[in-house]
Length: 79
Image (cartoon, rainbow, N blue to C red):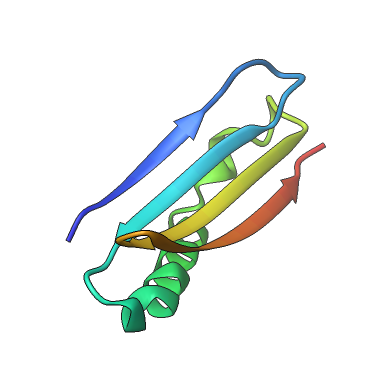
C-alpha cells in the first residue's frame, strides 16, 4: 500500500492545496480508501498552520486503483 500527502503553496493570494492520496489494488476498496484519506485530512488538521497566512485552503482526498480514481474535496475559508 502506498500513501502520501502532498502540499503546494504558491503565494498568499492563491489557495494552499493539500492532497492525501491512497492507492488500492481493487476497485471495491476505492470508496473506503477515499473516505480514509478524507478522515486523515480531518484528523491531522493539515490546514491548521495555514489559517493565518492564506484566505483559502483546499484539501483533496484521493484514492487510486489502476486507471480509476475517486476524489473528495474540502474547502476551508480561513479569513
